[in-house]
Image (cartoon, rainbow, N blue to C red; front, side, top):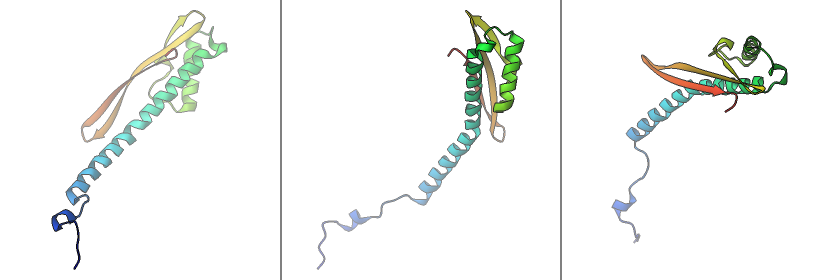
Length: 127
């Protein structure tokens, strides 16, 4: 005779039920869609921040006019494929010999039907 320390009630199968699997699948798909919509905006923000820091630390542009700094940003934006802002959106302030460049902008990303996500970004060359 087969002796076991487990009763039949303890030998139930364990795992994920079909409704649980569908629920988690929907959650994972929604998070993936949200990530695919938002990641490009954060990549572009990083490119904007990098461009501001590079232009502000450029020794040739330390004594340049505001117009020249904005043109330098427009050239860098064309190379880095920055579409959210242009050189005209940049605020240029001088702190000593070094210019400080800053920008504040909003990105609107449509998610589903009439639902959109609004993201406010602020970047500066000294932060």
